[in-house]
Amino acid sequence: MAANEIPFLEAVFGAFEKVNTRHDDKYFYVESDGIPTHKMMVGITNWQQQVPINHDYTGKNAWAIPIHPELAEKPMSTKSNFMKGAIAIAANGIPIFNPLNNRGEDANTIGELDQWGGHCGRADDYHYHLPPTHLQAKVGKDKPIAFALDGFPVYGETTEELDENLGRFTSDSSYQYHAVKEYPYLIAAMKGKVEINPRTRAPENEIMPQAKTRGVRPDLRPLRRAEIIGFENLAPQHYSLSYKVNSHIHKINYGWDTDGNYTFEFVNPDGTSRKSNYNRQ
Image (cartoon, rainbow, N blue to C red):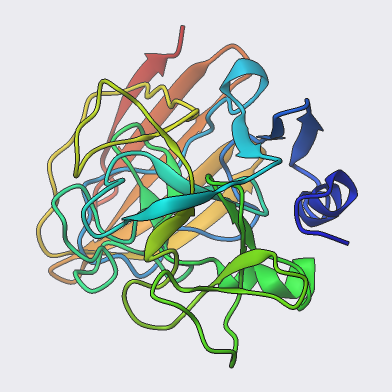
């Protein structure tokens, strides 16, 4: 079965209960709340004090994968493009961003990523910057772990020879990307045609359509010498993140209700704490 046939796409994303899908003649739509079922954030040593919260990737804000991808005459390099927004959507409904952050740095080598290759953006939105190869165990060895926003599938590592885009043509002449262990990790260049948001410019140009995030609190500055050491799901929609600064352990206990009310409790090493409340309209 071809990778872009609807039953195949449904099987890949259907491996995850929290993901919903639908399609029209042009796109296969992937809906999620932006929160994976695995732990997050642990191992980050370069942190901007962001934590994962839910995001409404549904309806008109769902992720869209072209059902009929077309090869580009000149693939666009991810080294000089797409440093804003996602370049792929993982099988569990979590977006995958360029391995380079918006400053052009390898997010992995500078300590920005957790043990699963992800972190949070300014809107407290969790996303990957590395290929989520840990999903292979769930989707199966013969299934892709993601789909690029040009419509071509992204598989795990392979012993097959890859081209300069980190992909290859299969025996049925279809194209697929693969993950590798070193930079650029996945999708060195977009083999397929993509539409660019006309309001963006390289290197921070953005692929369209692109789901949007809506944060609930102001941006925070990086916290020097902080290392995230724990992350727990205390109850539905309630989490606790632990981090260490100069051997002192701090916590952020946070969560939200169905009315869009968010509560953050910042717990100091001595047990004192302060709370902040926000509402997402």
